[in-house]
Image 1 (cartoon, helix red, strand yellow):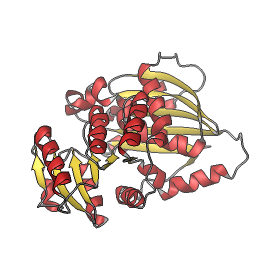
Image 2: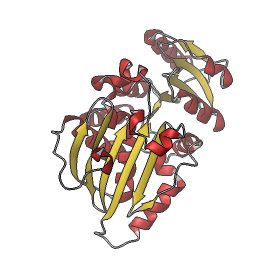
Image 3: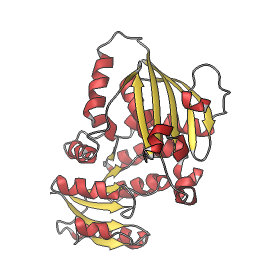
Length: 314
């Protein structure tokens, strides 16, 4: 049984990590969040120590490391706001633990280089949650593409709308410097998926970018991709919106819908199983996706010419 600590216990994604720690037969020893709305811990690890100040959490983790009483932290799970991931992974490695970090790993690609140096210095490892890489439908599509002739270019449309209320832009998620913007915050795992399936990135064009939506065109070794991401409920297609639906997700390859809406609930569990077996995705596996979203964040907007997502016609 491994000992875990968790940073960001009050966040949206933290319960999935708690569940994965429990499902894999391990123990959450300590958790930290500046927000104390963390009653969810009782459902999983009621005996975990909890801290609202990072300095006290840091001291506690260090005491456990020095005590040699079987409670030393083996892994630190990181569910904090995006802009803090880099710092919290550095903390985990220097505290003598491996890190398990939520997406996006970091906001800028050069942060990956710094973390790789600390991995070498500490002999500990960063693992990342790239959950779509373990989804059966995505794995099957990747194998199908790999078995085709090299140079085959598939036409892909990616549409992801996940509506958020007025709170969104008032939180850290609405702050470009903290979240990285829409493409980073809600799109980075899709961009990683595209790279995972279709190979190296060859072109990156941005057609629209605002606080609530972004769209553009990506070209990979084996795909041409038109993408659209939004947190605006008005972008949900009218028929679905009339039925009360506030989210919309669609990925088509050569006009054929890829069905992967099911099977999401246990992807964190499967990710943890792979990490604990020594098969986790590390820093380098994240580089292409982080390069992609960093370039989108700073790109000049290109007028609607050539290949662009049909939702931009609205």
